[in-house]
Length: 190
Image (cartoon, rainbow, N blue to C red; front, side, top):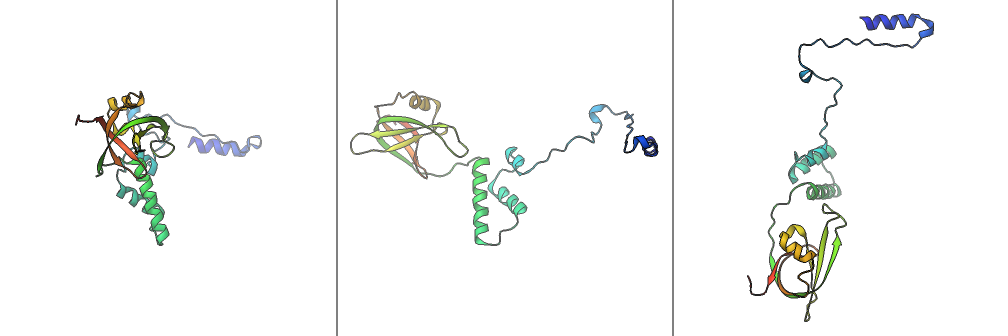
């Protein structure tokens, strides 16, 4: 009521044209401040990225369904391929990898060189890994040592180059473009 009166009064006065004043009344609620609703408080919007980071979307199927909901159902082969590639990429960045079946191989050799490199892309961007070059005889193999695949003790042996020149048996798995070390030990121990 007071707001309307002040606005009409301001409109009548020529020198106060366009003047607008609002009168706010104190909330005389008996509720404590912590229980009162704050009308100006922003609602936390859970968009797709927030849901992924807060682990509300946890698997490939949920990601796929959410993308279809937002982008629509693909109608062509190209759109289907793009949807599956987007789902695959997002899944690899935001979800935990489950244990995958893989074959373990063994290789005997002596390390001739250890070089460190940084991961350039992907979810492990910036992480250090080591490239181990095995020599001796006709074998010129390279293996990758990643921290997530090794125990702390084994990782420290590689990072401090304590295994350089030793004849060891390496357990590794073949990955897409490399061979990743899972364990190593002197010949005849295991």
